[in-house]
Length: 408
Image (cartoon, rainbow, N blue to C red; front, side, top):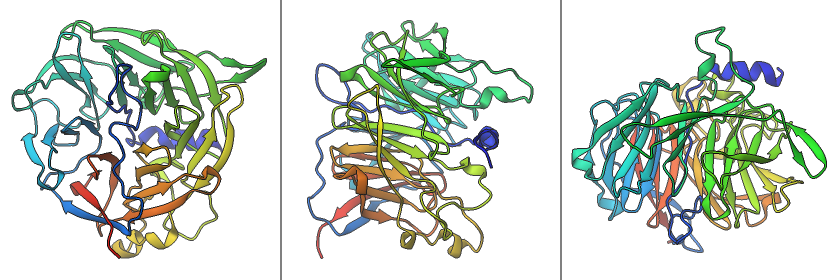
């Protein structure tokens, strides 16, 4: 099946989210380095310390000691100061039902806002969450929003159409684009369209851009960069002016079927790309059958020279860690989804019905498994790391909080 057909299959996919992580320092966040790594050098696995009784969760965002969860029942906010005893501060906030992505903005006016796509791909909502117990919607737009991402240290929000603007059938899509919302005035956001150029010059070589929109965007604010995983390619943007990004590099690797997520590491010299092969409409469970690898894999690229990104290797979750299809008695979709870089050598990611994996990419050409964890009914949408724990947003289970096991 060619890539065009597979892209059409993704029209009905509601998987994915834009993300950026808060961090310390005057220059603002660096994606994936929200807190110093406190993973032990040696550990034997992962085990849950808490599973708050929440309904299904999809997108997640950690801001300091607060965890934000989106989901069909709406936005939930938890205090994770003590991860083993996480406290729910707000739940099922009015007007946030059907949300699959959430991000946080620290506004120059001193208020804290949550940004969500709500009612499926319906529209974008801005909530004042300065007092989580009194969260309230401040403004809404009617933009079709598959996923959203707040540009760090700004009032700009990148709204990914993904493929949702192809609904209803026949709706004409532009060559490639992302809507940019500016919440400088939270009650009255403005909007502008960022249309992808047909190509980007990399050195003296023009490289075509084929993406119709981003599926997920991550940020490295210290380098003033954004990474757009655009289904058919991945782009690197200069976001020195958040309202006017510039495409500076593109990766179009034919071995990657769907560019679903992208995260940088090692001060922007390494890029990790997640392939959600064939989307959630895949006719077979891509990593719970005996198939030839790579299928839905993590790919590692040297991006120290933006004119010449170089593939280094891939990582596939071990087959012996998967049993969801056998337990359910029917095929269960299994693929890379959302995660984050923990430190210069480690990454955690949700893998749908395979649960989650902690990956060591000390050698990107031969990344290895540090640990996997999966409940019998796992369907992990996103994995986050903070405060020495891993937080799993699960579409069925709600939330699992894991710790590292150090004893033999």
